[in-house]
Amino acid sequence: MEEIVWDVLSATIDDKHLEILQALDKPRYDEDMATDLSIKATIVRKFLNDLHGYDLVRYNRMKNKETGWYTYIWERRNDKIIEYALKYIKLRMSEVSDKIEFETGNLMFYIPDGEAENKKAEELKEQATGEEAEAEEEDIVFNYITFMDAMSIDFKDPETGKHYVPFDNSVIIDDLKDEKNLYLEILNQLKAN
Image (cartoon, rainbow, N blue to C red; front, side, top):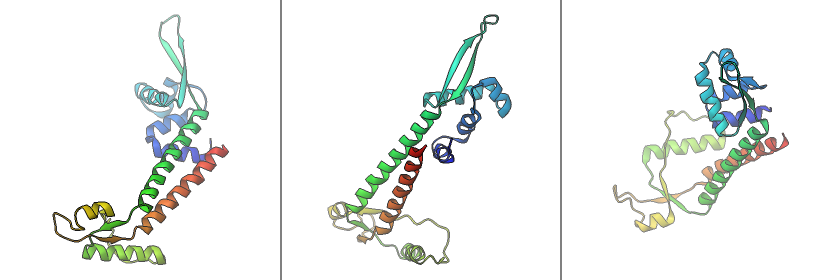
């Protein structure tokens, strides 16, 4: 399977599930996988059952006539894995498209905060020029609201009394468009498989 498929899976399932899925390069007994991966068989079965719930693996069950015990041979379902990855990317694209629509369809307002405002300006300058600005590695969170929400409170924060001013969200929109284009590239690569 293509690396891009594994990349998408690694974003959607945890490392142990991914490790189990990758170990199923051919049909295998769960006990053999447990031995090879140095994981208890019960844990391997739990992960396999989780993956089975997503339809990413299937099994054949056979009963030992002498002992009465069942044994399971597990198999990876590459067609379903690709389908799962496609579905995930389409969902992410839809979510990003909704965010783009929201951001472009609304005028946004925020309350400027002196020090945070200066850091944000440095960050935007860095993005525009490609030059690194010396700043702390602190994430600045801007809470911004739509025009309608700002208007409903008379453009004034009820808690602090500070005034809301227009917020240029074009950088956010550009980032969302870049993210959507990345998902589109991944989707095209997946469809090529």
